[in-house]
Image (cartoon, rainbow, N blue to C red; front, side, top):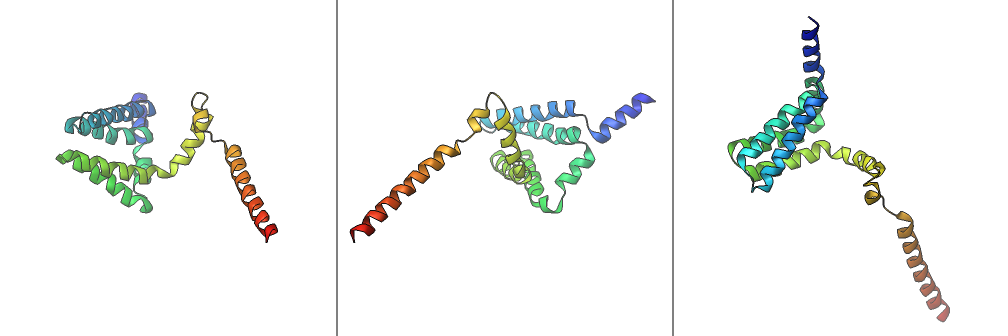
Length: 156
């Protein structure tokens, strides 16, 4: 009895370990398919693993509530149409439509990702920008312009 409740709980709420494996495999197959001149079969396999991985990772209810929000229906439609185009044999247009849909679905998460990447020890320094030196250059540039304007005003 307890094993059945554990299985139903994993189906209802998702299992992150299996889901991340499916999502990672789907990403690898998709990248491999694109690098091999849009190999249709690898792209199809990547899409199938992605379709299986998202609900397994987050759970079917949370996945449906996220993808079918009224403001995200256009992005979900683009993603679904892109997957359909890959399945019927038009991989270039399908992947382009999928990328557009994914950017519209998850575009609001990029600032959060940037904050996270800035805190990672190895690569954080690549994403940190030095605003002070840029501001100093700007202020010195404006100061030179002001000096020139004052010199012109003093001349006349």
